[in-house]
Image (tube, rainbow, N blue to C red):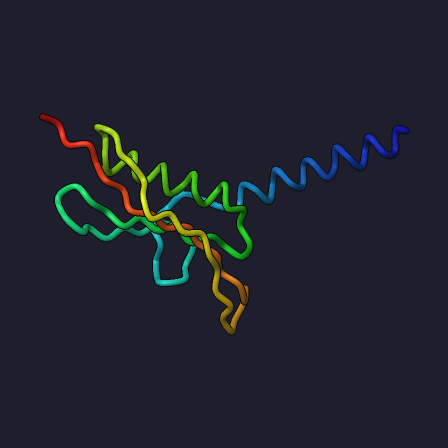
Length: 108
């Protein structure tokens, strides 16, 4: 019983450490981990967050929402959400990403 508990605790610690690998920062290139945005109009932004390797969709979406909140301090609505991935040659060979259009609430 103690061995099972020890294994479960060890697995949880490793999981938490690996989850911390998805940092929140600007991307340095097309497939580099991090966020990027494209201003489409005064109140519209295409926000993309690239994950390192096979990052969980929930983490990628949370980072898209976090960036939208930074760009749109008065609030926002996300539309055109997409989660996908691409296989490339290199290490890692799989990159996934989440992208959405954020419509900022403009102040009156």
